[in-house]
Length: 210
Image (cartoon, rainbow, N blue to C red; front, side, top):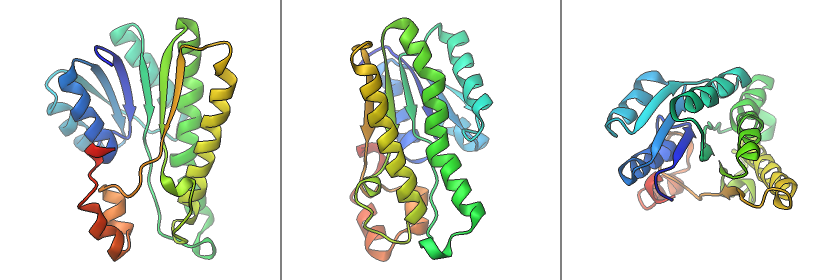
């Protein structure tokens, strides 16, 4: 993949920031999005003029649509869209509040839903494109009980991605739909929320390796 227009959400830290830093030197034009403006601008500044920061709340459909429209106006089209935004919480099922439940669903699951419905019509018009959804191995194997709603939301991301791939496969063979399920990755969330064993493991898997 060279010289592509790539939109990345959740790019102010972790996997999104690492992906931005890796793709920029390869000649891609990047539009990166997150809520944290200062951190997002810092990541963009490290790429020279290859990445344009757009402050975006991925829990709002209109923000996602504005992100797409900005990238389209700037570059004319979008080749790759990466739904990467997310957050986690360390709570068991019985400890969760309504607000915490809704918050994780909004950021982890609805953001993927909004991003998908926003970009796929553009890919269909072009007859090609690549949608990449960043999930987690916990979405397939919920090993840690205190990641309850996070794991559940990621599991739903996995299913939505599989269903979308089925929907597009026959009629749009040049639209790729990818699911990435990293294991333990050294991100802000996992350092705060991880068990001692998990935190120790973080030193072995940085976001740039995903």
